[in-house]
Length: 187
Image (cartoon, rainbow, N blue to C red):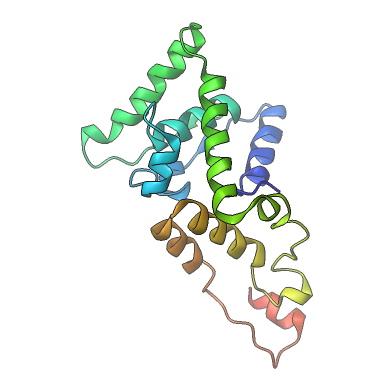
């Protein structure tokens, strides 16, 4: 599994494209890390060439094959970063910008940032062989999800985003007086 948590989603997107299905990306800048209000670490790591929202859009469009992205706007200026990403994408198609290098260099910086905060061994092995919340030993706890949140918080300082993602795990409690099957039905 990817230490940043995107391997499963990207695999699903690629499979949909193989099946000639369109892929509509909903709320990627909010659910993808509150990138309209990035943490200082995310903004600094992505760098000056583009904003976190521009990077996310280019990554999804170029590497993920996403063809439609929804963007929430409250004012016209909320489209500026997306329009900049679209312009960069158009320049890339004309051969005037090397989008692959731009994305690869940014991913490399993000990976190095994570390694510097949590260590190489954790990045390599930290999310492997973790039971899912559906495995009996986990008792409904989304251990992998919690560790992914840990990576984002420790590696990139994404406190607000991590708080929101963790709150989505608080919907149920495991009742130790009930059987595994009874608890799973409740989930």
